[in-house]
Length: 267
Length: 337
Image 1 (cartoon, rainbow over the protein chains, first blue to last red):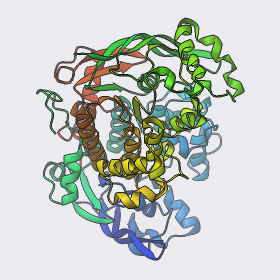
Image 2 (tube, chains in turn red, orange):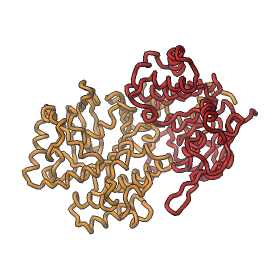
Image 3 (cartoon, rainbow over the protein chains, first blue to last red):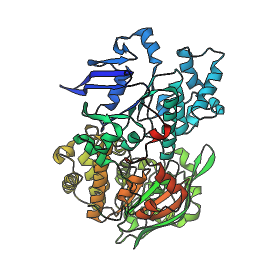
Image 4 (tube, helix red, strand yellow):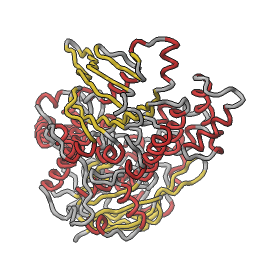
C-alpha cells in the first residue's frame, strides 16, 4: 500500500448559530492514496462540502490535521501555499458559477498556466490547445465565451483548468450532478481516463451512490458531520452497516429492467 | 380509461436572440384520469415546456399551436375566474403577444369574456403567482382549450425550487390558507384550519409551529412539503410535479416521492411527474413518455418502457442510468490501486 497522498485526521469545523455551536464537521479522519478515488457521501448537511472547502483551505478548521504530499498543509502560507495549491485542484457542480461567463475558454485556461508559471507566454496558446484536446474538445472552442457553450462542454473546461497545473489531487464537489445522464457518463469516463493516465487522485463528493459505485475505490459515508462508515465502495454500498448508509441505499432509485416495475401500487 | 386531457399536435416555439426555437414539435397524447404519468427527458427535451403548456403557464412571448382538450368532471365554469391575462400588461416586451395567438382566437376570447362577470379580483392573479411560483411573469398562452381549467384550483403545480415558489415574506400558514380561501371560498379561519390539516398531511413536524414559520426557517425538504400542501390545498384534479425532487438529497427525495404517491392515491388526483431521472420516474409512474428535442420519442406502460424499450434513445437513457448494481466504469477504465 502506497503512502497516503492526503491524510486528514481529527478534522473539525464548528459554526455558531445563535447561542448554539454546531459542528458541521466533527472529528473526521480519512486518507487518499495516489491515483485513488475516495467518495464522500451523505445527506444534505452531513458535512461533505465543508470537508471539501477545508481540504482546499477555502476555510480553516477549528481542529485537526491535513497532510498533503507528505507535508503539513495547514502550516503553509503565502507563496508556499500558492505553490502547493497547483497540486490540489477543484471542480464544482456548476461551472457557470465558477467562471466569469463572459470570459473566453482560452482566458479561463490561460489563467492557471500563467499564474502557476506552467508555460511561457509564447507556449501558452499551444498549452491551451493541448488541454482542450486532452478533455475531448476541439481547439476551435478557445475563442468562444463560457456562456455560449453547453453544460457538458463547460464541465470539460472546468476539468481542463483543473489539470492544467498537473495536480496530484482534484476535489470534485457534485461535479456531475447537474449534467444530463448521457453527458454525465462521458464526463465520468474522461475523469477515469485522466486518472489512469496521470495518476490523479479524486476526492469525489456526491449524493449519488450509483455514480459512486461506478467510479470510486473507497467511500466514506457521513452523517451530521461524523463518519458513519467507510470502506471499499462497492462492498459498503452492497451491504451498508450504518443506519444512514442503509437509508441512502434504500433511497436510491432502482431500475429493474426485467420485471414489472411501476405497475404495482406499493402503497 | 377515461382521458383527463387530450393533447393534439401541440407546438410551442420560443423566440431566442431573434430566431425561433421549436421547444415542442407536433406532440399528441392523452393522460388518463387518476393515472400517474411521467414525462422524461434531458435538457432541451421540452418536458418543462410541456408541463407549463398544460398548466397554462407558458410565457406570453411563446408561440403555440395545436390543442389541449380537458375532460374535467364537474369542472367549475371558466368565467368564475380571471386569468392573469386580464390583468394589465405592464411589460413592454410583451407587446407582440396578441399577434401570435393565431389559430386559437376562440379560446382566447372565451377567457377574455370571463371579465364580463366583473369577478376579477386582483388577488386571484396574485394568488396564482404565489402558488405557481412566477406565474405573475407568465400568462395563459393561447392554446385552444375546452373548458380551460384554473391553475391553483384545478391544477396544482410543484416546481423544482420551493425557495423560488414560496413567498419569503408570508408565513407558511398564510400561503396555504390563501389558496383555500381564494379557490374554495372558505373563511379565513376555515382556511387556516385547512392549512393546518394539510401540513399534517404532508407530515411536517409540529404543524402549529410551521403555520407561523417563514419559508427561510424551513429546510429544503420541508419547504417542498409546504409547496405540495399549497399545490393540493384547493383539491386539484391534476398535480404537476416538475423536477420537484431534483434539488433534494436522495433520502429526502425518496420521502417526497412517497408522499406524492400517497396524496395522489388518497385524493384520486392525476399525477404528471416531470423528471430527467428515468429510474425515479419508473418507481412512481404507471406510464412514461420519453421526450427528446421537443418530440415525443416513445410512450408506454412503465414495465414496457423499462424492460423492452422500442426506441434507441429510450434504451440509451436506460443504459446511461448508473444504478447501485451498475457495471463499474472503474474496471472498464482499468484503473488500479
